[in-house]
Length: 480
Image (cartoon, rainbow, N blue to C red; front, side):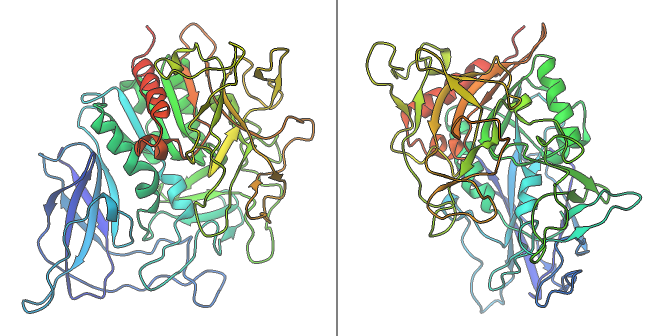
């Protein structure tokens, strides 16, 4: 592929080396660097003076190490593992990583893109990197720093070049927790089943208005919560022009972000507290909230669904927690999405089947649409929340019980945000699709749950796998 990779490294090891991998059906080692001298660089202090905490909002200014990307590397998501060089009589370097040991802090991922976009595939997999940075706690082995947009965040007032909001720098160390949980299983599944894809990040979609011109299908996978205004503009233009999007994700496009500092940091005016206070409510970067208190552009006008009509499962015992395993009640079983699954929708007088029953398909976060039941017991969108009336609900699961207070979750219950008082339909995880208006409008599918790529990737349910294949096979080419 060529090009350069720049890493910023701090270590108390005298010398270190780097081992590189490509993530696909397996985690394949693709190279190893020579030795480099190590140097330790302290993290900047928390700007609010919190004892023992470092800054989530400042560039940590670690020195760069720039390396060439070999021409023979295959495009895709790659991983770099940081290893201390041992003395000749000391321990050997650790064995190569595998998919079972992907998660960790002494490693990072990066995307290698083809020189000619679309030359390998017309499917683009967007890695949700803005969301990753919002949650990144900058922890490391033996030290929990717990600083992020959620843990000890920094809220700054507006300046001449930056809006008010919570700020996080993308120039901080992290790890690959999100990559290991959502992306690795699904990327492996794609490659095992012969679906070539190309990869990009949120920042690529933000910066390049022509990025999607070379593709027919955009994949949003897992947890895709933070979107910039440009990302959304570019995605909507893509669908209006006939492109397709599959949101195999949830809590999608919930907060707007503003890249700053030369696109190395993010600002988002959210409802996250700072200490015991909420510095600015209402949160002006909530996509669905009417202006001037929010953006005033409901996310479901793009996705068809919203987190405010769904919920999350903050189960005791740690993330992601266990949860009910009922799956989606099937609707419109004659739709092409269900072809080959054998699932029934009850129109024959029997009980409707459930897609993904017995698996943790619903959650841990999920999105939904305001809906009502027609005379035949079919859930249909009301459109009162911004969901297009053309949105076809293909699967639904009512979330019960629901606890309405987002900031003080009741463990073991579905928990969601307070939504518009005029919407009275129960909160429900919702799977479905709609077509953008106009002569060239493309199709947007939503899984309505963060864990669709986990269940599909690990092949925990054959019907979920078949639905995913039907989806990609149909949407991988634009309707001409």
